[in-house]
Image 1 (cartoon, helix red, strand yellow):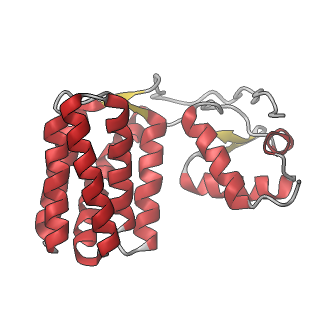
Image 2: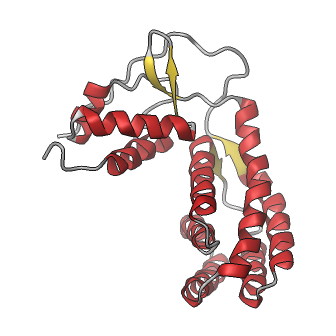
Length: 229
């Protein structure tokens, strides 16, 4: 099976393991171990690590090689600031470029979100929220902006845990208002509504783990995750 899995697939697998914490911040990413873990040769692993380094999930250190990045408190705060800039832009672009298919999916998600909010199911609500924002990112009509929005959400998921909002019904009403503006093609209203939604959602974000504020440990631990059968 070696050599038949693309670098993109390996990159996705490594990124998922970093976001989930299976590959811990600071741990070394040794090509041989990763190749065995994912059942591939070292070539796609090397390519994947280069991509992940450009995305900020991986860093290279002197005498240690590739390691899982360790975001600082400032970098974590910057992610939410960047979200406050990018998501309103994405909503405005979606208002100008969305397709009927995007609107159909978004309307279905808002309907389900409102139903789940009334009946109280936090797990479903978080998944539906993710799908809403991911679909909106797909509707912007720009592969580059879609990629930025998607990468940003993955990095926020890596650093933060999202607590079930106390105002779930209001949150889905806000989603519905953004959708209405997008459906009408009102870019400025979509931008303003998304900016307000992002601002109101800030209290639900909690750091997953203590983050460093100063110099990082120059000797990161070796990744010892068990090789998958």
